[in-house]
Image 1 (cartoon, rainbow, N blue to C red):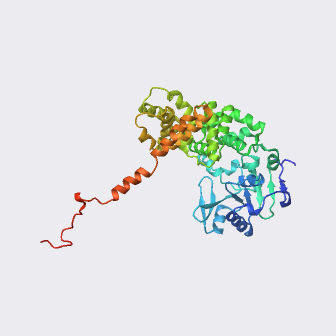
Image 2 (cartoon, one colour):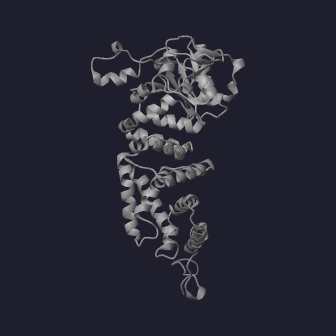
Image 3 (tube, rainbow, N blue to C red):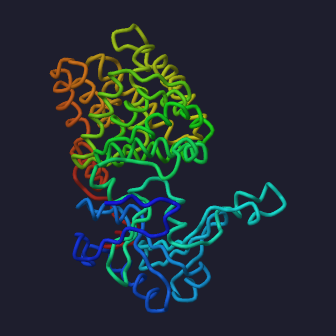
Length: 429
């Protein structure tokens, strides 16, 4: 199959008879948006990861729409439409309380004559210059994310060679990866994420560019990196991606000097397996898993340390990450409690305050963390089994129910006689 280039305006078009995507696989609300745009004379494409996943036989996380209609034109077509974003103007078409179909107008790379005189406004204007489907495809990050499904012809439209790369199970950047990673360093992390999620090989040019541009990831917005890290955990690839990031020199810049160890990556892969088994991942648990090995270096369970000292050391372990990424106090507190809970569980039973500790709301998750650690460290599984019945007994609702029932029972005077209300019942003699 010929690979389309930026100088070749003719895309590869795969007709309906030659691909597997059916409209039955597309969300009904997304279809409504596509059909209405098409009936009103606008181009209407399913774009991005949804097309990629459908071609791979996967279930897309969401569906996005691309069109040549401007955001204001989209808003006029849908009463339930809201325009969002100042830097990157998008239309959100709402269906019900929590269903949103995102509609983006095709855009192109800005040319010098497109930009305002004030350099401070360049970035905002550069993101809102509308273009053709072909120009929009070449603005995207990777070829497999730049495929379009045309609702009018039911064909796949490929301007960048994405179909060939899907067949080869290869991740390739659109254009020069050195330039694309300089434009947006987060693309390096996304390259590793897509490679792990889809089990695709990295194109050699992408791999080499990550080695060269790795330091630039430190310049990305902390809030964006923090969200991308959590996406790795939600997609159950955190262990593999961070291991690859370490091998390519990306990890120390990604996590502020963090040098991962084999045990850390092994533990994160166990966390990913826990998520895959249906246990929802939350940020405190992810943070505790990332920094557990570092915490154990300063606070090993066998050390003669008090819980107060463990609290201080857990806080110091998490402080650089939580400060840089502006992690909320509540999340930081829960992550610290997980590390402290791990320390208390790992040193064994019989210490002071055990009953109250077992009733702490973070203790069950701390036991989960200990169980995962025992699996990768070769620890004694009997330690976990010693804690399970004690935890079950301490968290049983029966004692609380008995106390509540006792509080509800009316008190009686000695001798079993109830106190008579004044002025009620029999008359005084």
